[in-house]
Length: 115
Image (cartoon, rainbow, N blue to C red; front, side, top):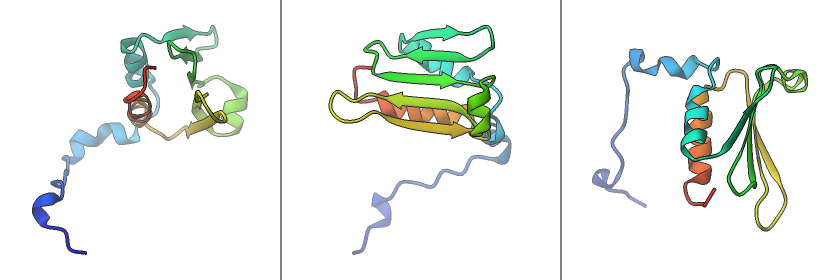
C-alpha cells in the first residue's frame, strides 16, 4: 500500500533546548494544573502525596513521591480507572517519567469522557 507524502503529518523536531522537560520528573505541576482545570477533587497529604478523583469518581490519579510502597515498585504516578462496564485497570508511571507525559496521558484518557 502506498501513502502519499501529502497525507502524512509533518515531522516535528523541537530544538534540544525546547525539550528540557523530557528529563524532568520532579514536579507534579503539569498534572495538577490539568486536574484543577477539570474540576477534580485534589487532596494533598501531610507526607506530600497527592490524590485526585474525577467528578464522577471513576478515575483516580495519585502523585506518590513519599509513598514507600510506590517507591518499592519504582513508581510515582498511579492512574486507576473504573469503567462503567468491565474491570478496573491501572497504569503506573515510574520515577523517570516526566509529569508532562503523565498529563498528556490523563488528558487523552478524559478527552472523550465526561470525567
